[in-house]
Image 1 (tube, rainbow, N blue to C red):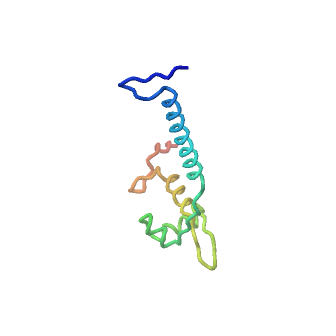
Image 2 (tube, rainbow, N blue to C red; image 1 turned 30 degrees about the horizontal axis):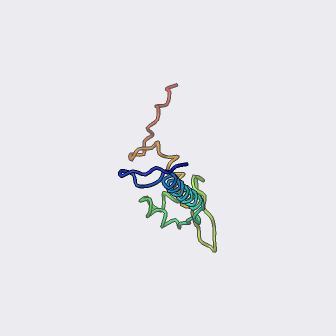
Image 3 (cartoon, rainbow, N blue to C red; image 1 turned 120 degrees about the vertical axis):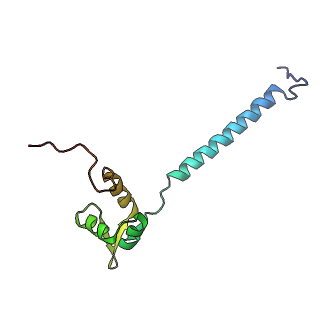
Length: 112
């Protein structure tokens, strides 16, 4: 096969194909390694009742109430009550139907 070169494009087609293949291969390798790295889970973060209340700007009593109603799960470790951060975030998402006033935003109950 004859290699073609001209003034506008000083590379042979084979050189260009080889270069593009190398770039694509390196890009795929980087993408795969980044995807694998993102799949590795970070260790679960545990918070005390006080830390949870401060982080989500509610009172410790509110956190205590959610624990009592079993809307949050507490874990005892060395005499301390710890709460998974992911559990708190899930509980907040599930109670998202409440406005700041504390009233339900859903449909009104039917009168009987």
